[in-house]
Image (cartoon, rainbow, N blue to C red; front, side, top):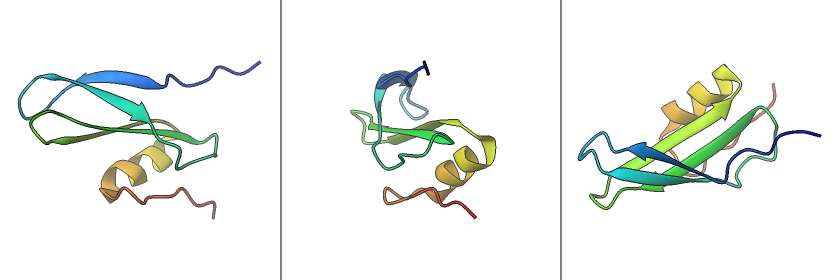
Length: 72
């Protein structure tokens, strides 16, 4: 049985230090990465991901809500 990723995580906003809840995104059915995104009350978008390092880095670097993980 595999562990399911948490549906929500909480982080501190880099701008205003308030706690921000990020939600697991449904953009990837792939087991390499679980992308999360949330928006702070100050308007700052917070992105996080867990999984394979190169997939996580490409997601965080993309800055795009339409990001998809592609297999090469």
